[in-house]
Structures are given as structure tokens and as C-alpha cells.
Image (cartoon, rainbow, N blue to C red; front, side, top):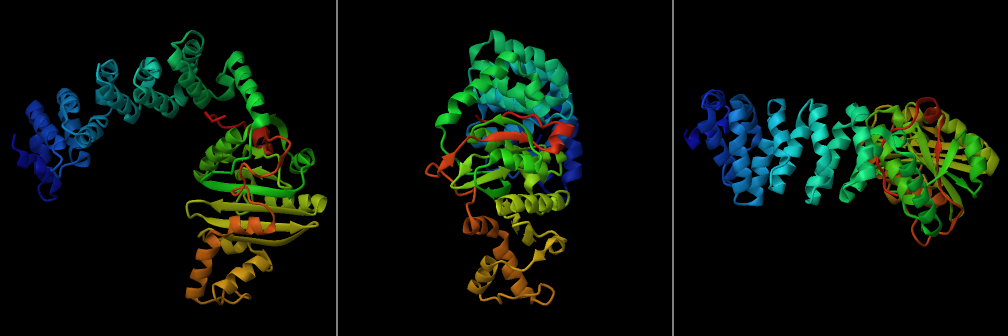
Length: 437
């Protein structure tokens, strides 16, 4: 089989004929494809060859394994591996058998192959459990990540075996088994001993912990002056507080924020209520979003109540990856301002009140009119303001008080942080996940 035939896969006008020729070429065609993948100068990549390799079927598996072993460079091995792990369900049994291969990188690519199968099934996932204690840390980590990703649908069958690893070992598998248990089954999957150990670790770490800035991709928070955590929680209707470290609270907020980005209401189930930090208490989590279509009116109502009780209350959203900003500022029971700039078509419908002095000052810095009507503003001015407003929430929060994105070890802290359930969490439960403590 000529190399030119394989390279014809890169040419739109020759691809169909090349696919037919290669698909009928069996092992000879598979060897030719593998040689091209291992050749760093070849234009052929996985997107060209995977459909053909799948049509060739089981005959292609062994040539790919040999190429993983013989690849002259790491780049060549990556090219071969990227095709190897996409052979699909037809290769599932072979992937599972290859988990015991003596070469760690072959085991790792076999694990990835299982992960990429549309329906890996319980047998293949059970076969991954011994690899949680693999001598190669990268293999063990890949097995853990695959179980976290594909295991939730098979949690009932996996949990007893993971608990056995927690009890009996091997020792180097225990920590990863705990992560998988938490990730696929949540707190309910943990044994009483493991749950007590986690709670004990939090009690040990929390007293000496220093504040850590919120690090989420999508940041949502309510800010209230003072340190009346119990009163703030009562006003917001938060219940079942449990002590957490900054690392744990922030990790949960970040994970739940990704659920919010995917449109899931599970993101509204819980919040991290911080200690008093430089005179402010923060409630962190997607439930606090002043610009969310589902949450905006309730956040407005709650901030109004908080401001009546504590003099001030603010709510913010900030997308740290260029996803915009939103803010709500209330004082003494009255909403002074709500503004949202996220690029969504209905942002302007959320606008309430007059621009804040900070907004006016920023517009003046940009050479824009401090007084403006969005409906009458020029396209150029509108675009310039939108660009600036996208990143404004953290700056505004700092100007009006404290931003949780700017706290650090030197921030004055009083009290302890807790994770609390929102009414959503009470009604529907909380997401599962493995988090840092």
C-alpha cells in the first residue's frame, strides 16, 4: 500500500476513493496509515485516518500498539495515540486487555480509549479500578479522571469496590479512590469513617488558614458590610451551614459555576459564606448572580432586604474569561442601580436606576459623556463602553468596599467560613464532586 494513497485522505477530491481503497486493505493498509501517523513530516492526522481505521476494524489495533512503542518522538507518539484512542466500541475489549500492558504509555492510551467510547459499560470501568494504584502516576491519574467522567452512570456498581480499596488498599490507590467516590456518588458514597476523616481535616486546617481570593471562571457574589453571618444567612434563607476551608469553598463555587455555565440549576444549590473579611461578609455562588434570567429578581429582592437590615448590600457577576460583568447596589432598602453588560441580547432590560459615580467617572476617563442614553449613543461609543464595562465589576466592588477577587493572606479575617444550602439545595439536593480541602 503506497504512502500516496494514505496522503490522498488529505485531499477533498481524492478522499472518498482513498478511504475505499484503504478500508479494504486490511492489515497492510493499517500499517501504511500508522507509518504516516508516526512521520512528523506527514500532512496526515487523526481526523483523516480514524474513520478508515474504524472500518478496517480489529486488524488495525496491533499496528497502532506497536507504533506507540516504536514512535521515534513524543510528538509522533501523540499523533499515533490520538488515533488509537478513537477506535470506538469495536475496540473496547482490546482496550481493556491492554490495561495490563508493561509499557505505561500504552496503558495510558488504552485508558483514554475507554474514556472515548460512547458506551464503555461497567466491565471496562471496573477494569480501571486496579490502575488507581498504578506505579505510573500519570496512568493512575488518567484512570481516576476516566472514572470521574464516565463512572456516575454506574456508581451503584462501582461504589462497593471503591470502598473496598479505601479499606484494604493498596495504599497508593486510596486517595484516588476517595476522589472517585466523592465525584461519582457525593457525600452519600463515602463511608462513615471517610466522612469523619474529611470533617476532621477541615477542623484541623481551618483555624490557621489565611484568606484566599475567589478563583472561579464565572464569579458571582453578594457583599454585605459587617460580620453578622447568622443574620445574613437568615435574611437570605440559607440553611445547614457546615465549616469549610477557603480552598474547599472556592473549589465548590468554581465547580458549581461551570454547571451554571452549562445551564444547570444544580449550580444554585449551595453557597460559600465567608468569614468577615476587612469588614465585609461575602456570599459566593451562582445563586447570587444579579444578571441571571432565573435569579435576577430574587437577588434584587434579597439585596433590598439585606440593605434595609445592614445599610448596604451589593451583588456582582464577573466572567473572568471575557464573559462580562453585572452589578446591583442597594442602600437602606432601596435599589440604587442594576446594570448588566455580558453581550446577551436582553442585558438592557435589567438596567435600573441612575449610573453610579464610579460609572460616570470611568466614562469620563474614556472620553465618553457621563450622562448617556444607550438608545441614542453612537455605535462607536456604545462599543467602547461595552468593552470597558465587561471588566468593571471587580473594580466597582473594590471602589464600594472589598472585592473577593482581591483578598489575600494579609486580609483581616474574623470568624470562619461555611458552606450553606439555598432553597434550591434543600429542595433538589447538591451536585457530586471531588474538591480540594
